[in-house]
Length: 208
Image (cartoon, rainbow, N blue to C red; front, top):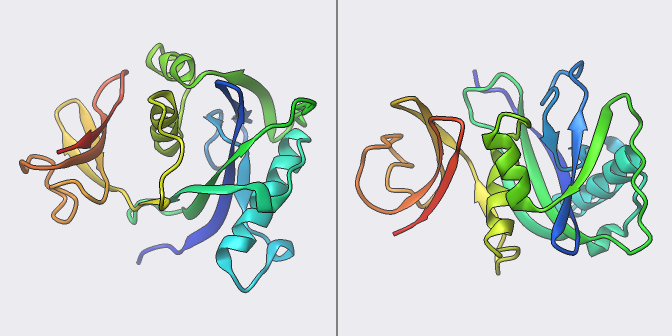
């Protein structure tokens, strides 16, 4: 039986060419020890008839709780929505919002749930993943890749509902628009929208 995807939200906070990443404690159940964007579950306090408004509220609240940085939820711009693959036992449907930090923003993590933070350029974060220094979840990796390529906003937020397929040396995550997305066959020729996770240096591929 497929587990429900729990509503959640995260903030991609920018400061010039850098973005804010936080490291989750190794004792946590989800994304233990990984470097992520600040965020978390949509709670009852965030409730609203419009799920996107509720997600904005949750993203702003989680940002404040995890980093001390406060933003108006209305200032958060939808970037993408990610849903955990159906084969996972614990799933989330997370809105990723883009926002710009004020010049006087000071980050203070709690050293319990969040044990570290870095302002880092996207390409530098990806290099740390390739070197084995950081662990980035696939949604964070794809977002950083897009930001590093200068793609930060689209007319409509991209909706990611990954389907995982095995390949030599690892696996590949297929997204809508990929020729193999519907069938789950990564070998089918045609359009590409996928993340290769078949070695230490992951590759996000999107195009005809």
